[in-house]
Image 1: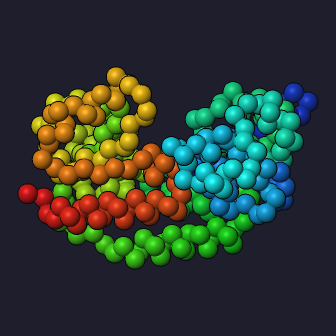
Image 2 (image 1 turned 90 degrees about the vertical axis):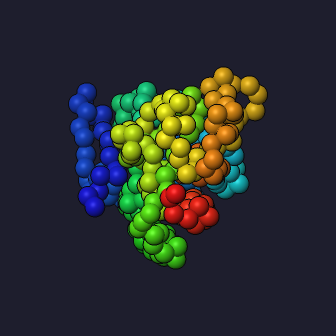
Image 3 (image 1 turned 45 degrees about the horizontal axis):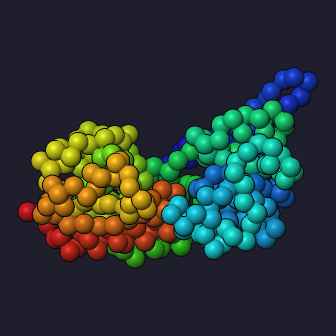
Length: 283
């Protein structure tokens, strides 16, 4: 698979001219002071960084609703992805996401601080590539290769899901949102032996599915996350009587289980496989 899972946006400020550098040019030596300002790069960096190499992670890494590495993250000073606080940490490398904290990334680049931006993970193949890319950025290639080998072995132990029949699974969130067929959650669902409803509905990039459409589709499994404390009109749809009356099964998975391309997504595949085995074939 081409190395599309890493978009490097290194720029140096030199006599008013901003020049992009390639990955090989920009990371000639292992960085010594790495700051991460993105939830997913936080966790990958904590898994792969050498002792003392990572000096700060974003505050989201310490949020148990978002992160699977809360305890590990508490060992690091947290940041709120603000350019001023990141600059004061004197990093020689900043890890970011392609769609997060863009004002911060732009300011850091103008200040001559190297920034590597990782795109969201949209498949299990991207999970593997993300580990390798983070290993290359941190000069921890051997550790990354070992992590990928464990990841592949864990997936292999699950075995192949039955090719057919494939029951239908739908992910359903606040306001009726469902990730598209080209998403990590969809790839996990399909690796477990389900057909993702988003694919049948033609939603490749995600979108909002009216409750009526979900009811008419009658999926064999609906995947839901926990609602947040308090009252939210956006989440009321998740407790609608028509939804709860669907005859199919229910599976709870939190965003943290599969929002980032981490080795632990194997656990999500395993849980979905158990749900698929419990359902058996599609009716």
